[in-house]
Length: 89
Image (cartoon, rainbow, N blue to C red; front, side):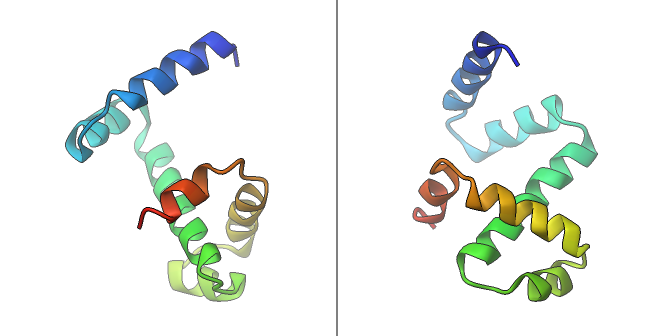
């Protein structure tokens, strides 16, 4: 991915001042499947951050353990973005 493209996208996100505007933008830029995956990833991360075991997350969300594991890897390699939003809850 070109840095300038990412910079432009990040700038767009910074201008989404309300949940309604964010929702409209996300529904336009992502496919329904991508949006569902993104929402699921966030649910996985929230549960991992609370200390919930991966198998419990799998059961609670009704997803495969592989998806939970991928979410766990993303959480573990996070650069601080997840924690920034988790601490604001």
